[in-house]
Image (tube, rainbow, N blue to C red; front, side, top):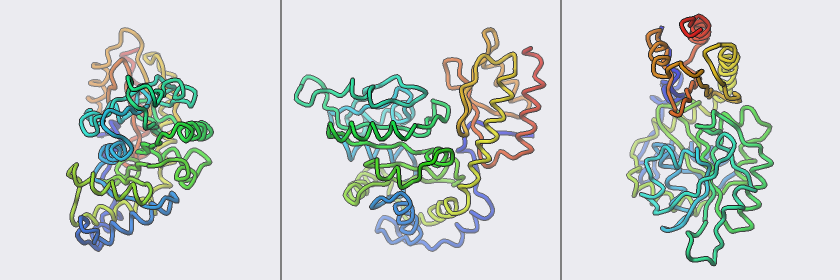
Length: 343
């Protein structure tokens, strides 16, 4: 048996999703004439109660476009030191926008209003970069799928308004957060200036993310997407996958979360595991006891047909997803229990 738990980006379209893609009506999206893209953008914008949306080939490009919209070269954005925009977007913050990052050591990727307040540069002190943007990530990737308390997000929004700062949400896995909290997409749309949501992770689409914002933001985003090389033609085939996923596959996230929670329980009982970070959604991060090689452990799992990934600094990651079946799950649980060579 072969089981891939490296990421939720490894999924493939379901049969029904492929059928929806094949049946899509398409046009030239660079001219905004692709009906399937227009439909997806309109529906997702309405879902979040925001004025407009724009389809992108990747979440990195949506985040980088949002940063470009909200900043000028020489500005500074505030984010957690685990943030995707800082760690996993190729230095795009500086390369694309000429912006620096003020990093905060939060709790599993989540920062507070009090922490942000402490690092906002005085706008009249020209020796320091001008603080113009706060970026949050929900759920947090390096934080193990942790979810923000919405009351803290509200407090951050109030602080941003007071200091005239824009607020962007990297919501690549926001769908997962919404599955486990009482908030709705509308609640998030009311708080953030821009939101990025991904279709190719938990929702199982082959490609795609959307940037949500005001009509003015999205007009600017169209230009920046073009500059970044993200203009696409008959992309409605991919947009149709997104529409199908939102209408039919959101409910399946609950299963991903259940399986991750069960993996957490099994790993907590293994004597070769030092620590398992609390599991809320579909990401599980754990560390091994001293003397057990991460590299050897990963290779031993690989020999048994199970792929996981190292995050470095003694952290290993498992991500459950829609292609991780119950048979896969039972096999992984049994394998972890039987790995007696580490006892």
